Amino acid sequence: MNFFEVVMDTFRNQGLMMVVMSSIIITLLGFFLRKRNIVNETAGKTLSSILLTVIIPALAFNSFMAPINQQSMRDGISILIWGFVLYIILIAVTIPVFAKYKGDRKTVLRLLTIFGSTTFFGIPIISALYGQEAVLLANLFNIGYRVFLYSYCYIKMSGLKMEKKNIKDMLLNPIVIATFAGLFIWLFQDSLPQIATGTNAYGYNIYHAFLRVDQTLPVFYRFVTFLSPLASPVAWLAIGVTLAGISIKEAAKEKDAWYYSLAKIAFVPVINLVLILILVSVGILDISNYGFAATMIMMATPAATVATAFAIGFDKEAVLASNASLLSTIVAVFSMPFWIVIIQIVQNMGIFN
Image (cartoon, rainbow, N blue to C red; front, side):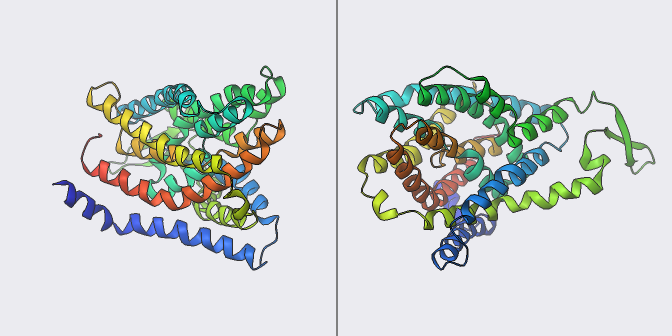
């Protein structure tokens, strides 16, 4: 199959195109609802809070309710390691990218470039496009992200050493709790006490770890499965509502915010793409199509909410951080379909396992 055929097959993928169009339409719906005052100015924050405290944790936990085998273990370890390595690379690469800036301005632009909105913006898209297996890999990739976000980013923004309160907030975050709880169950499901959950075609009992609630407590697990699919539409609505409440005209006047947005949405995903292709070709990195897609979407996300909050809270170029967050979100909404198509084209080339 030549390159042209790969591209055409990508655009003929109705499932892919439906998700792309849905994300844009639902985001615009949120924008319209706020502009027409059908919802008030607090709706965006309310939706975001529900998403981050209930829906995303449910999605994260749900992704780990899956069998473990040699292939999934290898993919998981590769993505986990790559998550740490990539952020170390981004920390180094962003120094020359923003070399012309000084002081707090340089610090803020660098950190907002390194840390994207992987949880709020990225995971819902990954879930809608690729399903549970990709979300599992995305959560493993996000472990490195969270370690650096709450350590390196916090220290650079605050100018202080790591505080006990910050570590506590990180560990008690609902998404972190759900991720590590799910990860523990996924990794050790073969070693945990087993419960018979049914019989196979030959009449023998089928056993699952007692913590595999999808198999052992199906009634309770329905709660999780009802919440998980809400991640994408709620996130897109929240983005649209939030964008409608901010002055795009004022943000657009900030040239440095535009430079940052292009670096974040274009330069960072390219770095990830090039490095992965090189490392896979020489046999150093072994990841699946889902792993590749998850990392690409994560890297094409706008400024992280937590990093922006750090900048505002510690008074480090608060106006720049707010403008950069807004513009990068707008750019990401309209550029994400492009990156999804690129991901599909690369996947169709059969490079990954």
